[in-house]
Length: 349
Image 1 (tube, rainbow, N blue to C red):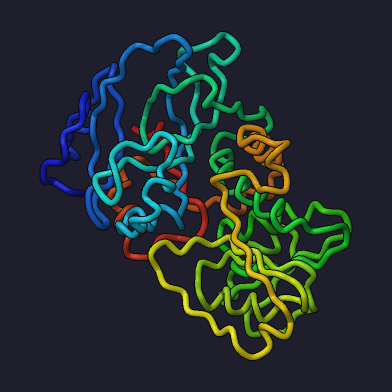
Image 2: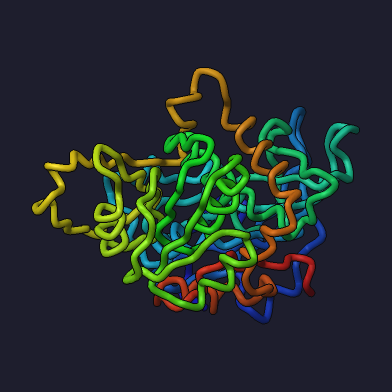
């Protein structure tokens, strides 16, 4: 954990590890990334909720490995720093920054219909926070709070599939069996008659595929000609593989985001003769196929309803106390963090 002074923020004080346990009753503890792989806890005094605001006590936050690895390394491209801002981010890229957007908590103060309810918010790693009531989405009673941190991954999966628009009976190939690829595969499995296959270079990913009820193949194996190809590997090699597997006159929908990394591709051979298209999918806006009819809040609510499916528990990684965020941030920057969604327990002492 960083020990040097951080940039001053109104209402915020920096705490050392030994001071974190002395949190005042009206203060919150937040996690700030202050350098490559380095962060610090800060105490934030919260004002009384204003009209329309809701006070939430955090139960769990989730680590979005792909995006938060870029943030932990300071690799958010200058051109994308405004577009990449999380809704309740504080600070600016590259550092210091309070980042994150997978937060599940309990409403302490707010409208009667929300008080005591479990809610999801696009809020960073912080023990308590205030947001407008409209920024919260209620978690269905059938969804355990820890599983609800996957709302961001499932919401991304919904948007990717809206972009890819698979039809009944399609053979769907998802390249990359990380958290996002697995979420896409499980949602796609619900399309009647579909045949969904995950492709990865790691044979151990077959276990997750089996738990999700979808097929699995290694990248070097031959697979039946797919109708729909989605790339979620986060690697240039995965994107190249997706292009090779795409059907003639088909397209590859790219769900990965590479940050500042340059991704070289071989676009010779039969790329032009087979007329392969490459199309990006990005969760920051609702897919243009349905944008005139669906809002981001509706999309998020759909994702939370889909999480009533217990199979999504296969995407939950390690449980960690919030006190372990220094080690987690270091692992994100070093590229040694796990592929699945690491969950941060804010109820831990």
